[in-house]
Length: 67
Image (cartoon, rainbow, N blue to C red; front, side, top):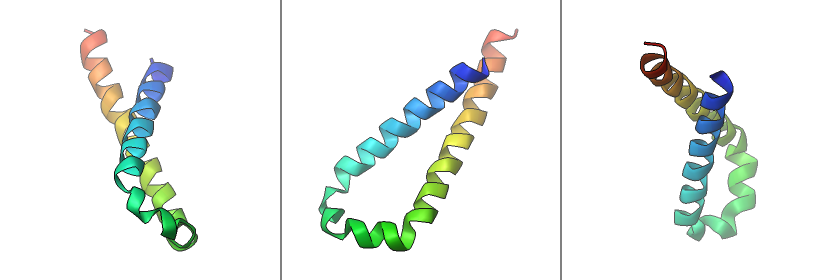
């Protein structure tokens, strides 16, 4: 169950990041500076979103499948 939850959270996170990348394409000329100055915080924020999605999906899966 944990592998399925992690896969679903990774898929959701990937789709969200890809959607944001499409919407924020006007920032492409500043990509190097943004990632140099804020890359660590962006990565940590994506990690926190992934972990929160894992926890949420795990809670939903427990309620639905273990009753």
